[in-house]
Length: 155
Image 1 (cartoon, helix red, strand yellow):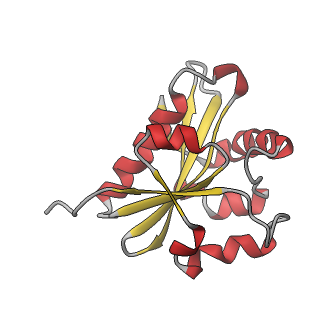
Image 2 (cartoon, helix red, strand yellow):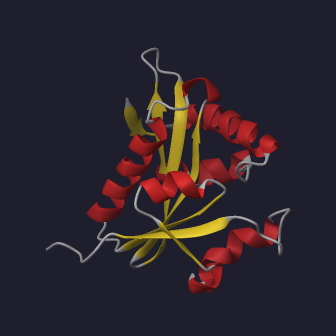
């Protein structure tokens, strides 16, 4: 089941992101940042209600949002949970009339299957780099920038 994250989901989200962060597959997020951005998160839960996947949609500009912190518990990879979470975030973006959604990722193949295309990071507005200043990889970012054009806003 996919639903909006709640306060009780923050620690399981943190554990999931930290696990992938230790592997170098994504950038971990501190607990304080997760609490600050709780409303950005969607979670996928198993029948017992345990968080086994998460994804955030963060608005960056009037027509631009970012998919971030996409992770699925390793025991559940390959079940299309990540794709369902991304589709949920994209539906939310459309509901807010967002025209373009980007991601910074180490898994470009996954996002290419979802319709995203590779772009040069310099094509993104400077505003999105505020998180990068505190990243351990700054200024030598090795993530792939990808974007999806959602098309014209429907009236």
